[in-house]
Image 1 (cartoon, helix red, strand yellow):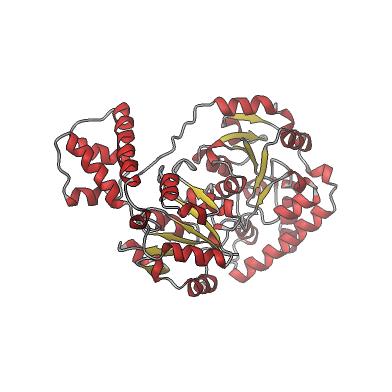
Image 2 (image 1 turned 135 degrees about the vertical axis):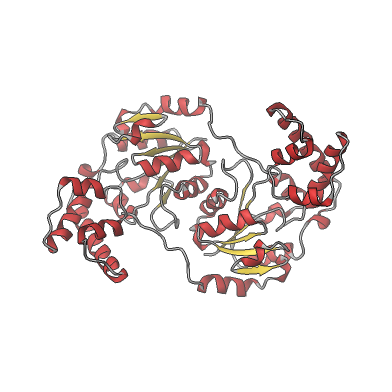
Length: 226
Length: 226
């Protein structure tokens, strides 16, 4: 039994611009304009660190961080609701998920986003998945592999037998650490250094992928201490 | 919904002496006698490292390690079959598991042992559990928390909401890293430094434990990056 586990943002949906728009609005409220290089730098950062960057040199209290985080979520989810699902879903994703389901594969989402369910419901992608884990499922976020392990358990497959689809460096590291077969998605540099690379799910031949994942040499042995 | 996740060796069953007996037999075949301090030192070691210690200064090849590991498993499982289940199960364990099931708790085993299923079947403890993970389920063994995360996923509860029963330093570290409430079991020093300590499951008031686990301050926040 093969299972496919997907990161959400950058893999199933393209929400970067929505996040950027929310950050721009927050910055505008304190009279700042975010330049493209600011936004690019914020891409890998946690929400709190994005806020610190925007408000710098002002120090933010925990109360500030919680408040502005909530504002950011509101702006982001508001923008999300105004966008047609088709504009959010990455190329070929629905067809790919349908094909995987037809072949009886188990499908999971392992995302660090607290908005995972909102996004998957809005796009109606939610119906394709057996298991969904979001930013509340585990304490430690990627590059810790915790969310992938949890989803693998929920799908009932050893994590090193899963095929994991990731676009981001931290997620790729996490998936590789637990011996999973990693498919890099998107335009990022990290994504190209994986066992299998594709700009979008549309570009992947599912049967060929499964075959390659099955035949690979597992680089990490299972360690049996007793 | 609370879930209870148990390490097996040293928590549900006491198999240390069986492992020692197998090591003694292997050592005897090469003319060595293992002293109590040898056995104590081998307790925390992986199987391969135990073999290296016994055969030292001779260097072992991968083939040697695989062969002697298989011999050790044979000796261990042979000795296991000759022992009455009652002599293996730790005090109060069956009653504790029954009580937990009656309260509708979800129960899992997260062990690094490759013999987990053999031991749980022989002792008939297997029927008490919803989920069992062994040394083949994840690539990285404790102190990596992988096996606990996998079992939490399979039980459908966030790992930081689970109560984990552990006797060994590595397992306790692993469980604490993911924010779980850890119950230390046994006579070890590490076990006494947990949120709740008991020599055996027999000594635990389940309702009081659940109450305390529920009311604790979670020391690790869930980190939401987006």
